[in-house]
Each structure stands twice: as structure tokens, then as C-alpha cells.
Length: 280
Length: 262
Image (cartoon, rainbow over all chains, first blue to last red; front, top):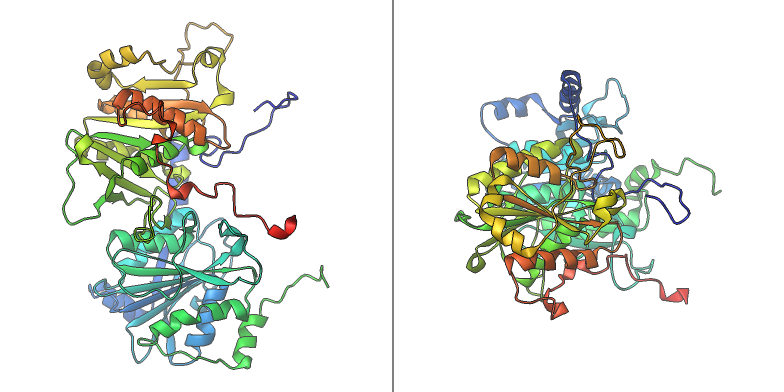
């Protein structure tokens, strides 16, 4: 675009990519590269041997509650309040590659950015912690592949997701004392009572929580997303506490530690102390 | 893939489909929002596809507290049976590597559903116009040969301007290079048009040259232009507020400002 003074600026468009109007005359080689890249970006689910065996024989995971935590605070919240309190075991993880993946050789399932846990005594609750980045083109596939492994009758899905309060739109100014706070969005088949206010238009849910909601809405699965808008980017105990009312609601199906020891809290909050000394 | 939201499959036979192309300034999408909200159309299904970036939100057309809590997805189909009108709204950007696949999916869905005609509302970068495109109104149209056959009369009466083909090398007169169709910033518009020509689908493109910014006036221009043809509302230009702005258009420029600032 030429400005008033005549210099030519490249224009950013919020709706379309810049080079989409060029005719793509693709040759065989381009096609080949594209195909290989698509294969490399595929989402893979890895279950423990006994689980994958039962999946192979056509038995889907029997599960009444599926809890997904997206983001560091949501994931650590489950680690502190749920996963430490009882006999939880890792049953699988998701492995995927995208532009933000670091080349980690010999990564074990525990270190994966997306891990599934199940309670040893009551296996009807499945927990998934997602702390890594899933690219926009991988979200749909993630939801398809994960839900393909779950028995869908009477399934209840709960998603906890971290968001930044900067992304929250409201006519009134959000003062810093009101954050963190929860907002919910649920599918048509969700019949329960939400523990917080519903997400107001024009706010939307994006990323993995949106992919899960879309899948559940279309396939008529009861699902609810609780978005926690926080003004702190790192893990902190106040933001984690915000999710507590959700657990109280789920207390029928899972046990949780209502007041975790400081020792455990410290373990999970400390690990991401600011590495930089810029502001000291 | 089309998935019905109710138990029964909707019938689109002989319906007119209006859909946006995700394009510069989101003009088509805004115009479609105006149609759905003004005509109070009901949702009949979703296009569930991996070609769109996932998003979800509460009812964008909520009128009261009771109907606000209703989840909506990135691509949904609405109908107004009495007008024989169906509308596809697309609320998310298309994943760039999958735009071709998306085009094919839309074209085959249109074909299978038996729509009598399809109108694509779109836009194009105004700064990339050539000299001839800068003349007259910023509105242009394109029709596929199969729609031209049946709507030639009506289009002639409207006196609309057809989208000009531009030469590949402006200023050079080379007999070998044919002027070509070019819709910069139009997203899948050109793909949809050429695919529909190839498949012999009756499809029209209505587009507007615009720039990114507050594109609400552009949306009104485009929707009034469409209304001149389809007569969805009677004489909306005499009563400028006849189109109903949906609640989801609020706060387009961000949240409220801190009162302490003043």
C-alpha cells in the first residue's frame, strides 16, 4: 500500500494470508514436500501396552469423566490438588511435532507435553494435562484422535484452560483486583450447572479447548470449558485456586486434596522461577 | 462435512445459498452476520472440518439473556424456509495449506445439497486495483456460465459492473498473454469461482474493493447491493437501520478504558 508520502508498505490483513492470491503452479516436488510435512505434523497417541491392546480389539476406554487441563496453571492445579492425592498412573501420551517443538532425543512419556492419567481404583476418570504448544492445523486432529479412543456414551468432558486477562473484552475496565476469574462455555447437551458466569459475547474460546468443544458439540457429547483469565503469565497458586470450584463439582467422581501442603505447592510453583535477573 | 444440528436432515433443494469468503476486512462475514441476525434465521447444522481454525463462543445473535447461552462453532448453516434461503457463516480463518481442500469440500457440498444458486460475498484489496477498476463504484460481480444462462436478464437490469480481468504485465501489449482474473486478498473467492465454473455450478460472486479497518460501512454497502438483487428486505436504504447489528459486533476496538486515565 502506498502511503500519503508515497512509500510502499506491506499491509497486514487480519483475515487473509498475504500470498494467497498467487496461482500455485505446483510441481511434483512441491507436492511431495507438502505430503511429507503433513505426515511429520501428524498427531500420534501412545498408550500403555494393555490399553492399546484393548483399543485394538475394539474396546474403547471406559470413561465417565474426561478432564483436560490446558496451560501451565491448569495442569499444575491438577498436579497439586488431584494427582498427588491418590494412586494415579500414566496411561499414555500424545506425541506431535511442529515449528515450536524442540529436538529432544529420548523423551519419555512423563516428559511429554500432553499426558493422560487414570486412577488405579476407579478407572472411569481420565485426566489429560496439556502444557505444550499444539499448532492450529493439529488441533482438529488431536480432538478426533483422542475422542476416537473414548467410549462416548454418558461421557462428561471438563476442560480447564489458562487465558490472559488481556484477551478478555468487556465494556467496563477490568481492574487488576478482579483477576483471576473464571468463565464457562458448554455444549448443547451439557445439562449440569456451571460453577461460574457464562462467557459473554464477543469473547470466544480458541485453541485446544475450542477444538474439544467443537468436536463435542457436533457429536453431542456433554462438555464444558472453564477459562481462567489471569494477569500472571507464570504458574502461581492464586490462579490455580481459581479452578477449585470446578473440582468441588466433580467431587463425586474424583477425590481431591482441598488444602495441599505447602511442600507440594512449592514444588510445582517454584520450578518456573523467572530465569532472568533483568528486574532484580 | 455437514452435520445436522437437529435429528432430521434439512432439505436445501432449490434454496439460494449465501456464503462469505474469508477475505480482506471480513466484509463478507459481517454482511452474512447481518442477514442471519435481521431475518432471525435458525441454525440447522455445522460444517465440521479440519480446514478451519477451531473457535467457539456463545450465541453471537443473542437478543435476550435467555438465548445468550448457546454454543456456536466456526462454520454453521442457517435457513429461512419461507424465503428459500440458506446461509453459511464462516467465523474462522482457513488453514492456509488446506484452502484448496476447503474449496473442494464446499463445492461438493453445494452440489450434493441441490442449491439452486450460490452467492459468495467477498472483498478485495482496494490498493491493488488497476486503472480501469478505479472507475465507478467499488462493487463488482462475477457469475459462472451456468448462472449467466438463467440470470442474465436480471443482472442486465441491475446494471452492475463485472469484475475486470487484469493483464499479467500492465503496460505491455503482448498478444500472447490473456488478461486474467485476479482477486488479491479475496481468500478462496477465486478458487470457488473457478471450481464452480469447472463443475458447472450456478454461482455468483459479489465483491467490494476495500481496505482493512472499520469495515462495518463496507458490510452495509455489500448487503444493500445484494438486497437489490435478492430482495431479502424491502427498501432497506430508505430506512438505514433496518439491518439488525448482532450483539457480537460490540467492542470491535477492544475493552473499556481505565477511568483513572482521566
